[in-house]
Image: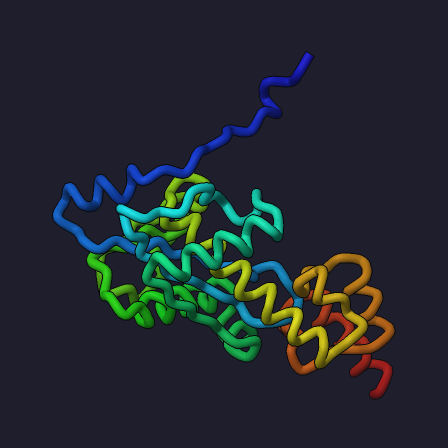
Amino acid sequence: MQNRSMVLPKFTADYSFETAAFGRGARPVAGVDEVGRGPLAGPVIAAAVILDPGNIPAGLADSKALSVVKRERLFTLISASAVVAIGSASVEEIDTLNILRASHLAMIRAISGLRLAPDHCLIDGNMIPAGLKIQGEAIVKGDAKSLSIAAASIVAKVTRDRMMVDLAQQYPGYGWEVNAGYPVPLHLKALLDLGVTPVHRRSFRPVHNILYQDKIVSD
């Protein structure tokens, strides 16, 4: 018998959060999400998306629940039908600010980059980024609940994955073209064998430990 306590709730993204904001007089409404908090290398990327209510691509969902092929197809459809902007925070900013603040900075940059200024933002997560100068609404698991946030999650994911493929060509051996910089065994082994690159996050423990160990050895 299945353990009911282990069954996780499932959500289907819809347009209800956007419609509720419209009812309060907010228009347009942007969905905002980020990707790349967990990797040991590369920037954190955020996307802000204002969907066209009359032309919402079918199949929008949390990017983590979609195959690569579906994400790429939806990325093309979103880019063609919606107002989209990307924001990023560099490895240096991540190490200086911490990953949470850097993620929020990337979100603010994405929102600021929209060619159409939103009245209201639906933010994935439980916090509204500091410095947001318009109305914001934090939605836990928002990428699985709001179509606009789902669209932003897809755009951010595809954008960052492509960026990591490019970085993998510059720094071969770490497997970033398949692991996107996350701390999988191949990446961790390469860190030990090949060392730390300029695009590794020095404030993250596995990278910090290698650098600290190297310092002890060299001293």
